[in-house]
Amino acid sequence: MSATVENHELGGPHVSDHIEELSIRDLHAFYGEGHALHGIDMTVYRGELVTLLGRNGSGRTTTLRSIVGLMGRRTGSIMLKGQEIIKASPHAIAHMGVGYCPEERGIFSSLNVEENLMLPPEVAAGGMSVEELYEMFPNLSERRKSPGMRLSGGEQQMLAMARILRTGANVLLLDEITEGLAPVIVDKLAEVLIELKTRGYTVLLVEQNFRFAAPLADRHFIMDHGNVAAVIHKDELEEKQHVFDEYLSV
Amino acid sequence: MLTDLLGIPPQVLFGQLMLGLINGAFYAVLSLGLAVIFGLLNIVNFAHGAFYMLGAFATVAVTQYLGIGYWGALIVAPLVVGAFGAAIEYFLLRRLTGVDHLYGLLLTFGLALVIEGSFVKMFGASGLPYPVPAQLTGGVNLGFMFLPWYRGWVVVASLAVCIATWFLFERTKIGAYLRAGTENPKLLQAFGVNVPLLTTLAYGYGVALAAFAGVLVAPITQVSPLMGSNLIIVVFAVVVIGGMGSIMGAVVTGLAMGVIEGLTRVFWPEASATVIFMVMAIVLVLRPAGLFGKTA
Image: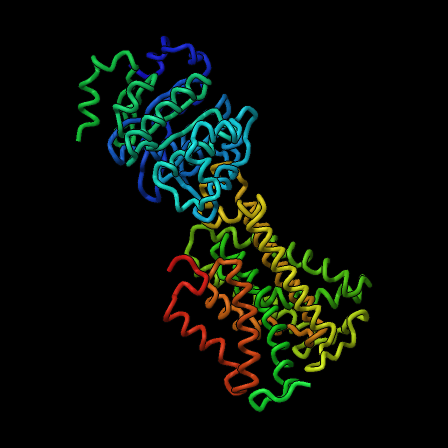
């Protein structure tokens, strides 16, 4: 039936299935007059990696923007680590350990690679060190003094990931991180996500690329017209193939 | 002794160059403040001239009532006026977030009229004298010109403030926040930076720069309620020439325009009042984003 009922036997030792890291109830969000989210419910457990799948305009990006506080008007409830954040300001939400990687990557062009990397304030202890990040993304290390606007799409994406891993955020909201990237970089990002899972990060991944997301995710939220249309556990991928076909095929 | 250059006595030429450099220093500090404010708030701060005037009046006031004199005023006046500016951002300008830039311009223009009008009412339009600080009276004869110490100090102090501001923006963490906030304030806030606070501080800093220029100018001109509105139009032209929102652009263009104005006063005195606007027109045609502007 609903998402929460199906959640009890989540795979992987990394998932703490009793701790609700993020719990969204009846979330509505609006762009001006436009009603973008129509009361979504969603629970994500600590250490889980879930995807938000759906067609363009189904409300996936809006869901992430609502969580980080970037939507002007939203109603309902968003509990993060047990605290209500529906009325919190974006900077306060970030300091609760949320790292946001926007779809457009948001690399600041007037800052160089290192400044971009060091820009987000530390929000919690336990973030990765700069050395660790340069090891994870060697390309960035070579280009640390390059201005942000000179980077390739793949380098920008790595930088956008690296800079939120430095801050100690352990709830990551990643929007279309593989979009338009070469396969070798997509593979690299998959490696990084697997590493993050083993370290216990909670990840919400908005993806178009189902083949990228399928082997990584614990559960998939299928979004349609501003609603959560279905929740599919990773063990049900085959039997629920028709759901993917119904909501994701163009 | 140098002989005449192109029929111009060197005393006249260098005298006007020096004057141009001083005016340029004021243009630089004022347009720098405008650039800082425009960068983060996207507001064309029409009240800038009024804050400059407030800086000069604050200099007179702290000297008269607190007895701390010019050197104290150099610190206190920018702090007080900057705090006043920060309050204006917090209580008024912040409410304009998300509406057309034009409203910011109208609000600050209205503020300028209110502030200047109240000062005319209280002090009259003629102005108050302020003495040059005792340590900087007199000057030195350089052979080709006479350099009053105070004027040399104005150029040095202005440049020091410009360089300090450049350093703040380009080499510090808070500068990285300010640059990032200029580009994408929402994302910066989503990273955990208190952007509303940063914006208030940036406005206060821009206003403090205007007040600092006001302190510097107090011993040179009459301190009068309308001194800012006379200057601010030229400063806006300088900002348009340099390009909105560029720190280096504001400083370099400010100094250059002052010098060009000074030279014009030597070689074509009739045009000296308009030369900056002619340069502005030409720049707008050839490079609409300004000499240092990044986007059109």
